[in-house]
Image (cartoon, rainbow, N blue to C red; front, side, top):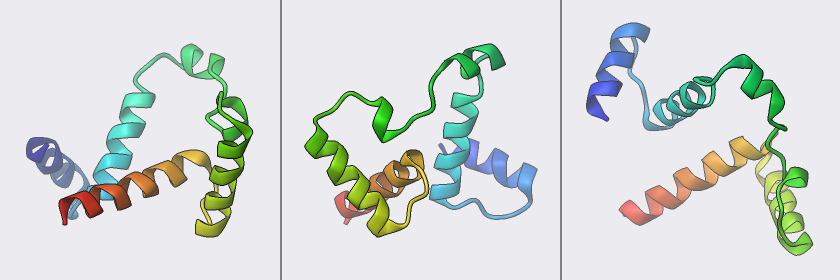
Length: 88
């Protein structure tokens, strides 16, 4: 991971924090497929996932409380908080 971070710092000419590194790696991974593949997949949203309605409502409430504009942002923020808590 440090090699990837060093490469990004060299390209971007500024320090790359953990959250930015994770977002950029995720975007690179998601966009590495063909454009046709990406356009055929439905967007990631609470409505398109198979889950209990109670869980769906809970996630919507969490997104509203945190101000997350989309599911991916909310999940990344939640994962970051969880990782920080586990590391402490």
